Length: 167
Image (tube, rainbow, N blue to C red):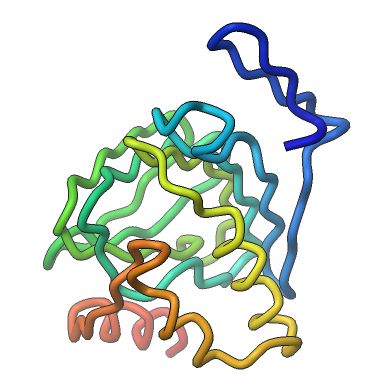
């Protein structure tokens, strides 16, 4: 993490030096990966355009995922329930819990994500950006599920929520 400053156990990532990766509907700012935090956490920020879908239904086996909405509104699936998080809302999704997220209909969303304990995820986010831009094969994501602890599942509830948004 070349633009992060690590002293003792503190990690500082300056906004001006943070790596970003983007796709047609979002920009992700990579803040601290597990290697920089001694495995304590991984964190990044995502800015979603109106109508942007963030992630299909999936779960993690080793980490909790924390969402903090900095601005806008984020529609989320947690297990079988869909809700909307607004500016200032905070959500913790424990391991083995299916979840998904997208910008809420008619809204942009600016969200801070934290995984704890941290797992190396920045390579996954870079891969995701390449797939979304058509520069990599989507099968690479499926083949990396164990490595990145991202296990995709079918969710009829989430599919219905997304269909509702487009009609």
